[in-house]
Length: 181
Image (cartoon, rainbow, N blue to C red):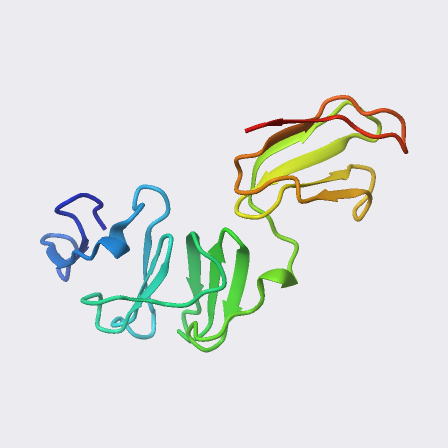
């Protein structure tokens, strides 16, 4: 995959000695520098998947691609079962989803405690607080003393949030929060 005006998806059938441009659709090469990936189904080399902002699939060896529904956007990784191309695990900004039918149906985004954290802040309280700015969903935080303890949600979205707990008073009192956008 080459991302530029003349770029696109290239294929080699001679172990890389020569390359042929197969597809120049701009949708398949967007953000190639960031997270664009090409995967070939190990059980059928005519089925290709391209991961970037959208999740796309080709059924003709990469000549054409269609946008393929998935639970979230910004796709980063894909696992395809080597023995059964219908079993997929897709990783994206929302977590990971599982499909047993080639991506026609996916597991829920809300069935696992996952997050893509861009920035983590702590304070000097005891026990200290941890606050994380997440990708595409609200930031959240918690006391570090135990899982499932005090939890703050809805503090901002999309990794642009820069919040910190600067000075916390004793338990039961309010903390001061500063926001930098």
